[in-house]
Image (cartoon, rainbow, N blue to C red; front, side, top):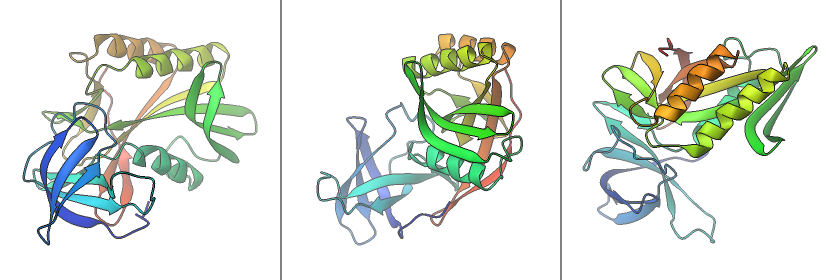
Amino acid sequence: MLYPQKLIHGHLIRRYKRFLTDVELDNGEVVTAHCTNSGSMKSCLEEGAEVYLSPVSDPKRKTRFTWEMIKINGSWVGINTSIPNRLAFELMQKNIIPGLEGYTEIKREVKHNDSRLDIYATKPGERCFVEVKNVTLKEGDMALFPDAKTLRGQKHLKTLMELRDENVRAVMLYIIQRMDIHAFAPAANIDPKYSQLLKEAYEKGVEIIPVQVKVSPREVTFQKILPLAL
């Protein structure tokens, strides 16, 4: 997935009020950017680190920039939580994700009962719902989710299990926007309920696919499926 505009380089000053970030651009100007990530961002916050922002032309937006990525330990970590949904949709359209190929119809943001799931795909003889989550938390060489307690995430897992009860294919797709990890696991110490529900979902037949992607100032690209540790 290519970024539609050239990104702007700077260095992180601070993140505050969850959704705001002050950044010093290379020309010395200090700007405030929108941070889409409402989580703790543990393991991907470092004051003074290099960052890239995307410019925003919408006159209704209070901030003129969106924070896209930060350089941690020499590699880029994507922190824009809107990227994974767009990327997953594009990858499925191009048949790039192993196990999620061959769909003839792919839609975004489809309701099921009282939940809205990120992707709905069909092909002859199969219906499939896919929920997509952004992963940035790192502990050792493991990518973990979530980085803060998520009632919404718990609800999505329950919905995926309901779909399995209806004999519909259900997939939990984790988009891991960093390269310095080797496997994926639920963050049981942060949200034990989510961790338990993920294990229950897996036992019910919900598929768990951890996808590692490489983030650069030009694009975000599929790398591989990571091992799962439940």
